Amino acid sequence: PLDVVLKVLKEEASSEGMAGSSAFLLADATAAATEAAKAAAKAAEAALKANPPRTSVLSDGNDVLTVNVGGEDFTVSRSTMLLAPPGSLLHSTFAKGSRHLLTLDDNQRPFLNFPATAFRYIADHLRLLEHLPKSSVLEPLQVSPAHQRQVEDLAWILGVANLVLTSAQFGLADRPQLPARQRSLWSCCARRRSGGTRNYSQQADQPLIDDDTDLAIQRV
Image 1 (cartoon, helix red, strand yellow):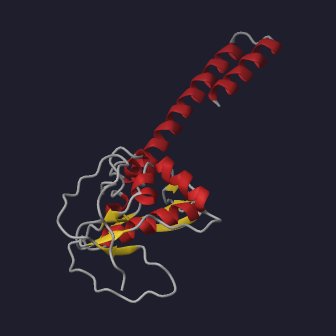
Image 2 (image 1 turned 180 degrees about the vertical axis):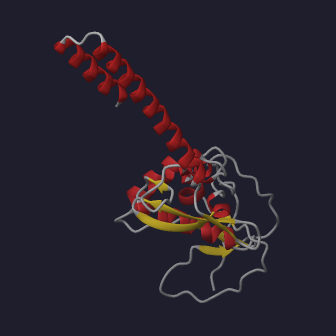
């Protein structure tokens, strides 16, 4: 650090009794160190601006980002991550111009210091929600016991606990209703909607479905 360098130079000057030309040399060295520190700071700022998060753009204009989450690479669409409630940490992290994406790893990919497995659970649930027809309902995320606590904690930190873990959510895709399908070995997380229409309005980590909504659907 600059202040440590300056302190050492001053101590050396004092101990050796520098005078005359030696004092001028010390002043020159101090000024040079100051300018070097300023130049380094400017270079670091320029490097961040010159290396924004790597993205590609789909035909529909949606950004696709590759990020390093807890040491694992994830490729996600920005629109999927922005299903998180406005004001939540997950939403602000993936918003355009987010400062959270400025920390880069050795491969110049944005680094997010979240547990990778828990993040994958949450991201995959949002992917299903984005592609599920509005005529269907997505049940709360089911997590293996080994990862349940970590997923719950991360969902709470990211501000998506209600969206992902607590309440069933209507699908968001403008697609035809999916046909019923046979399920014998495991229970599906998605089911048909009970009917009617509902406006999609999402506030910070609040369920999209009222608690008293009748969602009982007979599985086939």
